[in-house]
Figure 1 (cartoon, rainbow, N blue to C red):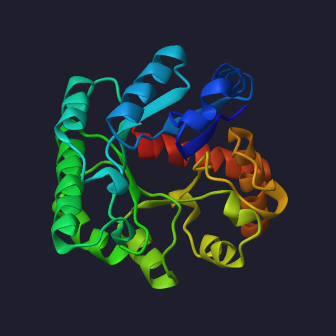
Figure 2 (spheres, rainbow, N blue to C red):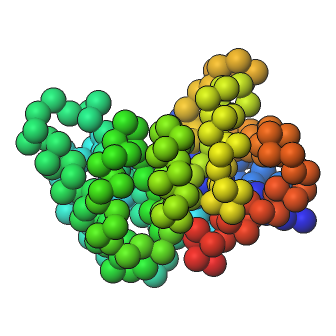
Length: 251
């Protein structure tokens, strides 16, 4: 039986804390591994704590662009100290919606670039937040040699998707795929060998998910929907995504 990989979830978010024992048990029973991404120092430390509880938690630590204006050095130190343990660096990236000035934009870019440098130094994959900044990110990434690059919750256009495919980047789709026509169209243009799936929990989704706190078990619905769109059996696509996930993670 194949393992299911959630390429991007915030298990370190306080929303999950009261249910964490149950979540970890479900992951073990259902053969789910999760790339647990972080936002700042506090969530990075919590991610490491979760890794100690379950090796099905694949720790990604880093600074989200929303948090880039805060002190960054402690997170850089945490990456350095745990470089042999962590699975990757994330969630990192760029996002202008969190800033008001050019100075703040420059800080955000500096924090992003520093984390890319650490990923290159320790040969770690990265999980990238790229909302409305794909053009900027495409300009920056070629300067670094990074083994696995994920553009999580891909939200670009068809041309940007082609650029991602041509550069060997992975892209991931989440529960929104089940009911969003634009995401379904992008999926059909995605090379299956560069496809990953995610929940991005605890983000809440509408329609059939009824704005409930996202559960890691939603992954099966995402994979089932993708299999129908790609005209591939669920079992075959699950195997493909497991292989893709391992290549992204370098395992």
